[in-house]
Length: 250
Image (cartoon, rainbow, N blue to C red):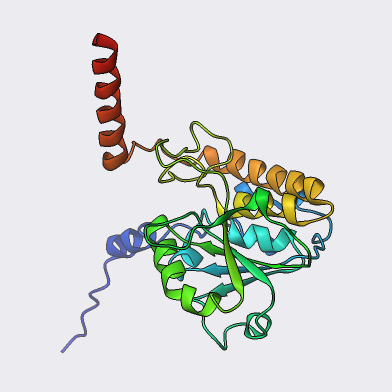
């Protein structure tokens, strides 16, 4: 019996034409796609600080392309990232020694009132702990870490206003994603604002970090789509508008 060749040249061509497109070229230094590479904006060498920075990054955030934490650790010599959902003994030799520390997060219901970072009386080198994740994840991370942190760390916050809708890339040059309310900023900007207060050369450090963040936002802006206001925030905004209009009528 004669063998039959079932190979279809047309099918072969179709298979090759449907092959996946080539992967984007990634910069080996900043780990970002080449079109948004930040290497020429990074410090020539990581900035040394007296403050040691611990960044607790949620596992989901570690996969997010807009996370500022990887760039922050490229900029700061003493910044360390821990990918986990909470801080606990055994994750950091530094924290296991219970050093004088502050952890950065706005006040939440039933939480210990934080100290505004601008009012912090710094008498020794502190460890700065920041949380990197979505607003929901960050609150969960703080809540599950507080028992451990209560042994040695105080809670601090930046100025914020829950009555003001958060910014976005389209109305603030420093914000990559929609924030829950005014004063909530990216991890990189939050750390920069803290170091301004905590470091002897804080103003210069903050300036450099903000410059890098500004370039990151500028490069990324061309690839982002406009974001609609969050329904809850929009509802609050409309309610306040109606109340204001009612007062004007009276």
